[in-house]
Amino acid sequence: MKVEPRLHFHMPLQRTPFHARTSAANVLNQWGNWSGYTTALVFEDEAMEYSAIRNAASLYDLCPMVKYRFTGPDAAACLDRLTLRAASRLSVGGVHYTAWCDDAGKFLDDGTLFRLGPEDFRLCCQERHLPWLIDSALGFDVRVREETEEVAALSLQGPCSAVVLQAAGFDVSALKPFRMMSLPFGDGTLLISRTGFTGDLGYELWTTPDQALRLWDHLTVAGRPWGIRPVGSSALNLARIEAGFVITNMDFIAAHQAVREDRTRSPIEMALDWMIDWDKGHFNGRRALLAEREGKTSRWAFVGLDVPGNVPATGAVIYAGKTKEAGFVTAAEWLPTAKRNVALAHIERKYLKSDLWADIYALRELQYARLMLPVTVTERPFFNPARKRATPPGRF
Image (tube, rainbow, N blue to C red; front, side, top):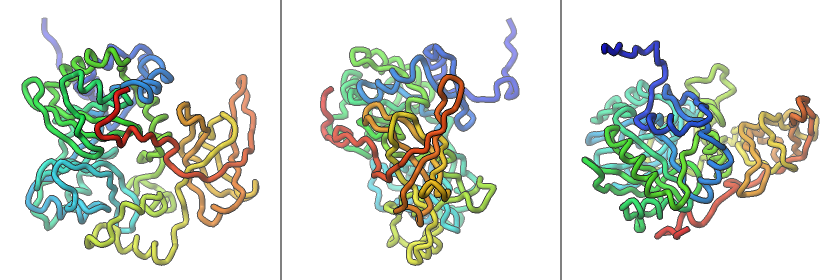
């Protein structure tokens, strides 16, 4: 029998190396687009998937995450120039959360930087930036390339994740947060980093595409006694809100994609100025950010909000004193573990000390009821368990 090749216009979204397993498990057949890949939104039950993240162990397909490799004698210097943090101070085997801006000091993206060797880094992020990264590397002895299709990645998160890895034959008891280790697996190696996007105990596993299905099956069998299950992006989004994490083009617009000039944000406005290393030398956006800091010219503040009741303030407009528009909500949920109704929002700084109100529309029996509720600025994260930092991790 002759098999016709599948052309790109027959299958516009790519499939990850784990697709054979995720498609078999996706009972609801709910899929979405993540960076040109087919990704599961919900497999069977969003509530149970969230419960696995917080109470057991969960598997999430990370393959669509965009991955860039920086190699060469000037790799660290190039990344110092590109990103907000000092890549040159990141030790081999370490990981840190970072971000980068344009020359006007406006956010382009955030992500995690892995130092695989003295002259070898992997940068993982939400959006594609290869032309920008290559332009930023001019004058440096460094090679920049995208390696998204060369890496199969799984996120194993939850309080039982360390025990599952132990049962699978991977001893991670000494692995500290934001560190990584390599272990033999199958015909190659498995890189395990103690990182994640849930704000909980968890790990990310990195291997080659040919080992992907073997890894999935191996973890699924090992994790069965601890209730391991695949989770989709909907459950992960609930967990990341609880952790107070941000997502590009959901909580802020990438500067190079913004149509309107006033839609962009700086790291200071996004409450991420803690990561800026002012003493490392020049980096993209430094002059603009320094002027913003010294002149106190930030217009916006990205904050957490406590909301009364149990109706999420999704898409709500925030008012000062019920009359002046003061901001808007980017993400909101009732948090099952934290037992709080919260939101992430942009508020104009001049209104931060005002009485703030959220204009919420609640769907009740096919009709929307308008709720004007008082909201309070609160600290993030909304959920911050000690188990995510414990080394060795506890047994749950």
